[in-house]
Length: 95
Length: 416
Image (cartoon, rainbow over all chains, first blue to last red; front, side, top):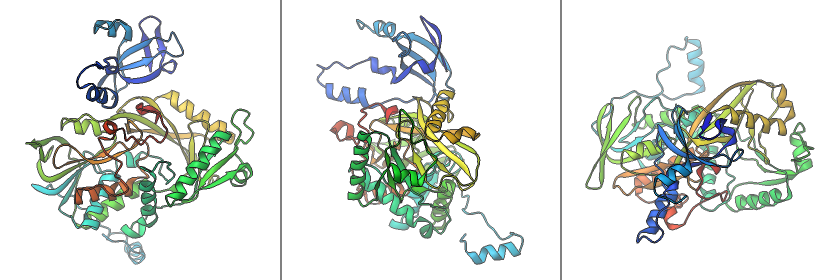
C-alpha cells in the first residue's frame, strides 16, 4: 500500500507502524463520573468495520508524524490521508 | 453415511456408484432449540458435541457460504498444547486430548499426525522462558522437553546453527503437537452432527437478530426468520460484523494473516519448526509442500489477502533459519481473517442479551482449539455454566482486569 503523506507525498506503507482506530484520539475525560466505564470502552472496544475505517499510522521510518488514514478494510484502498495533528485540533484539542 | 474398509472394497468393485452425500441439505425449520451461526470448525464441533454429549439434536448450523470455507480451510493445520497461563493451558490440553481420540470418535480420517513441534531458542533469556513454559505445560498434563544445540542438530541438521546474529541455542520440543488435515475436521464434525439430526443449512446468511425485551428470539436470514431458544454466534473473523447486528461492540479487531505453500518436495521436514528470532514457522504437508507462515499484516482487514511486505518478511525469516529454502519455489499464498482480541485470548461466553451466546476472538490459535471450543461451547449452551477449563474466557474480563495476555503486550491486538 502507498500512503499519500500530506507533507512528504506518496510513501511505502512499510515506513509506517500501525496503531489502530482513530477514535484513540478522543481520550475520555478522566474526571467524569463514569470515567472508568469510558476508559474501558475507549481502550478495549472497537467498531472494527468492514469498509471505511479511519485509523492512526505513525511515520516511524520517516518524519515521525502521526497520520489519520481513511482506508477501506475490504479492498485496502486508501481514500484520504490527514495529519493527526490537524484532526485533533479540529476536534478542539490543543495539539 | 458410515465408512468402512469393506465399503471401500465394495465400491471399488462396483464403480463407486453407491456413495451418497455425506450430509443432508435440508431447508430450515421454523424454529430450533439452538441455532449456531457459522458452519466452520468451531460451529460444527459445537453442534456435534451438543448432540453427542448433551443429547440436544434440534439444532441448526447456519452458514453464509459453504461449510469449512472460512478459517478452518485457511490455516496452517497445526495442533499444540504449549501455552503458559493457567487460563489457557488446561483448555488447550483438553483440545489436544480430544484431537488424539477424534478420528475414532467421529469415524472419519482427519489425518491427525503428532509429529512434534520444536520452538527454537536463540538466547539465554529465551531458554529461560522456554524452560518456564515447559514446566507450566507439564504441570497442566502436557509434555515438554528442553533440547540443547546438539539435540536440535540431531533432529534437523540443515538448520542454520551458526547464524551470526541468531545462533540456535536449543529448543522446546512438544512431541504430542503436530498437524491435522484441516478440511477433514470440518467434514467429520459435519457428518457426525448430521447423523445425529442436526440441520446444516448452507448459503444462508444471517441478516439480523430478533431481540425483544432483552431476549433473543431468533435470527433473520436470507431464507427467512428462524426462531431459536438459544442463538450461538461462532464466526471468528467476522464476529464484529455479526454481533453489530445485535448492537454489540466487541474487544476485537479483524486482521489478515497470510500463509504459504511451496512446490512439492521429497520428505525433508518430519515435524513443525518455529523460528525464535523472527516470525516464521514451517512444516511439510503429506503432499510434500512446505507449509509456512509468519506475522500479521498488522492493519485492520477483512480482505482475505495480504500485501507483499509480509511475504518478504516471512521469506527472510525462512532464509535465516533454513538457507536451503532459497532453492524452493513458493507455489501459492492465502490470507485468513483473524478475530484479534485485546489480550490475545478467546471468548466463550453468554452475552448481556438473554439467549444470545458468543464464541470468538481466537486470534491465530483457532484451528488447534476446534475440539475444545466446540466441547466447551456446547457445555455452556446446554448447561448455562462455563466448562471448567473455559471459565476465564469471559467477555467482561477487561472490565474486571482479568486479562489472559500470554505475551504481555497490552491492549494492542496486532501485537499478540
